[in-house]
Image (cartoon, rainbow, N blue to C red; front, top):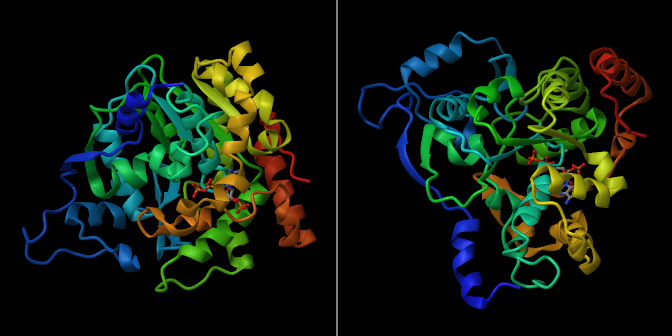
Length: 366
Ligand code: PAP
């Protein structure tokens, strides 16, 4: 167990607090020109953007958005204009370092869970998950505060963060598909963990979440409409099959760089998957740790039931405009059976087989 003086100094490094160096040039400085256009239909999230950016945006194919007026097809995937701005800044400015860890998911696949687990595994010698029942950072911080997203936190609004003070291994997260991430993580030793959830539950989780958090300026998405959009691939960072396939193929090609984990597998067998994660991150559990119950303690600390009941996850916001409580709904496998009609389930099943079956990527969703 670390001494109390170490405990006092470490949270500053482990719980990131980033300074912004400067904003991406694409974001117009306020008041610099006469009549800046505003992004349409983003409600409270409206931002002033440059003409160059607006022009680029207008050249992209667009569809009805789920929580903003539009989703744009950018670099082959669907996303919101603010996300495009952040991703452009990330792609331009982020410099990977050896040992960086990047957690990748398509939204609602269990990102929050993976962040909690990875943070706890990597920092277990600073914050003992067995004995630190009151001072573990997860008890007072949402996992999204401990492992920041490139596109929602670090590079949001075209910001360029100062990452120089971060302890190694730096741990980040992203929803960006592999094709748009790969040039930024070329440094040898960078590791990517992809967390995949079956498309049925991911869809239902997305549908609930988006209707809970969307701006009032955007009309609710009915289940039928959402299903149609999802089926056509029109969802944030989708099509889902391309997102999954990109990381799946890379995990087969370079297993030392990309680890592919499944939500359903962790639900069924946390212990062996947690060991897999720790070994992949080059911090395998020792026999002594296993005997001490470290693996079980991490599993319990990061469990849905434990995180959901914490005050920080009931009443705070970790990402602007997103209440943490909406990140913890049911946390179950197969909740989709309560929502999808048999014909919808059959159509989605056929689509999944068609798009992914040939690559050996299968799911347990019953
Ligand atoms: P994000 O993409 O917005 O970060 P993400 O964490 O990926 O969200 O997904 C949220 C889902 O993970 C929710 O699923 P549900 O709607 O089917 O309930 C949420 O309940 C679930 N979830 C969050 N934390 C955990 C956890 N510790 N264990 C299992 N599932 C969890």
